[in-house]
Image 1 (cartoon, rainbow, N blue to C red):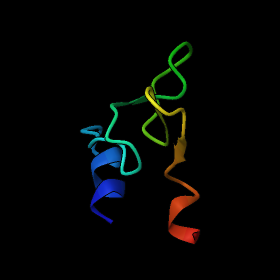
Image 2 (cartoon, helix red, strand yellow; image 1 turned 90 degrees about the horizontal axis):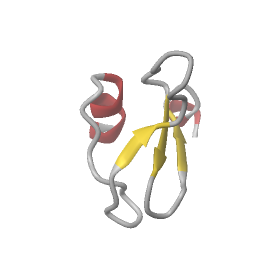
Image 3 (cartoon, helix red, strand yellow; image 1 turned 90 degrees about the vertical axis):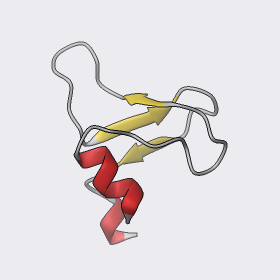
Length: 53
């Protein structure tokens, strides 16, 4: 749950799988805190769907 809260506050923690840095998934139009991707392993974190899982 702390990962989810940090992503919503736009202070991302390292990727829980590999420890790599997280970055915004959508960069062009507008930065949104609901989509993040790990720049090291490529895993995408969608914060709007995480609570359901």
